[in-house]
Image (cartoon, rainbow, N blue to C red):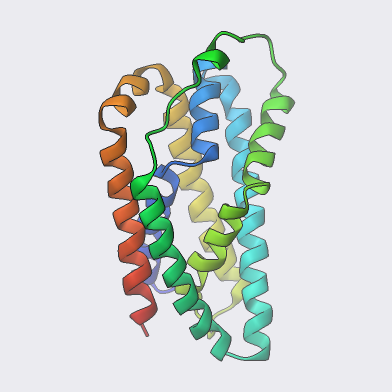
Length: 205
């Protein structure tokens, strides 16, 4: 992957990790309920789930490329349209909030339970798979090795997702008032980023 392409991917992946979603909410909730250390199990499960979805998306794209390189152009345009639509949805979404009822139900929990919840939260979210199917073709270079590109993209996203969710979990209590105060404007910033990516990237060579 060319350096300039990777840098654009890095910015886009940071925007994805910071945008509202089930795993961010889960990290926030588990951080408040069980503490940052226990929430590492949640983060690990969610990250593994996202890496699996990236693998499914990329090697599915690879199978299409094997039959016709024209599929990549079609995927880029369809994916760009989806990213614009998703950006509008993120822009309009309410800020993340902790469920007060959940905070009253704190109890002992095993790490493997949190891991499973994080994993299933990622794997059972159809929007995540749709996002990666739309997102990754913008960065795939059919002239380069697909396995190496998967390693770079999945590794980059995993590192960003871990850092983001650990930060959210560690600052869960302190982030709550901030989210209530500026959460909607933050969502609008993330949504605007997706719209820009969706509109601009399919036009790249």
